[in-house]
Image (cartoon, rainbow, N blue to C red; front, side, top):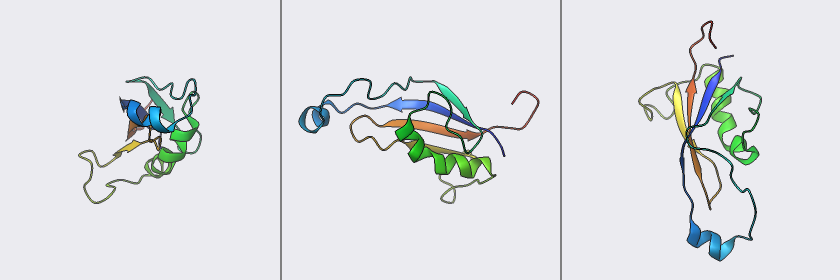
Length: 105
């Protein structure tokens, strides 16, 4: 299996929706922009959001097993995917990239 780098690329925050529909919660999202996680394909990286993992894990697993070119040319790098978590109040976009196999990975 190949390792997959998961990088936090963007965070959105919809204050209007939160105010109208969400009960107050603390630490709803602790993802930091630019933070990178490494996955071996089947195990959630330490510190990675459980809810986000449920969304990205099928793509991580596929990439780790050699999948590429999702949706026939969707991504410029065919060994990557841009996936957002399913939080409708504060979605986070993650860049998933298959890592090259070498002595440093």
